[in-house]
Image (cartoon, rainbow, N blue to C red):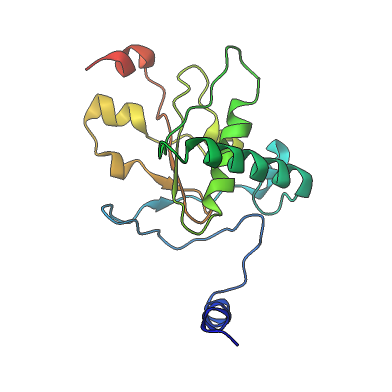
Length: 180
């Protein structure tokens, strides 16, 4: 048996069995440069309702479509080494949150990717809602109250995925984003 196969076998024995579609964890996440990030586990009922690719929602066809989208994004951004992208639309209810969450989870499943999903929809922040997580402080709170970003990050119980919610509703959020 080759050394690579032996190492993979050993790593598999040391790691608990994981769901191939998504995982839940309750341990604090450590990311270099940040203290322990708050972990707020997603609701299984919410991911099923909103068709988010996390346990227990399993849709292999949808999973394959997001893997294909991920591959196309990687191919397009490989030359420029772009690591950030925006998902937007001109109208409500066109699937921004659905696509952003499922794509973030798909990227986070890659062993060498850590993903930060920032909900910056000032009119209808819904990333946390799609995961069944109550409204949390976030980006607007950082900007308004000078709270460090590291204190606003959330791990939703999906390996290698962090969230930065928009924050608790504030008046003139869009204006605050445009400010210095």
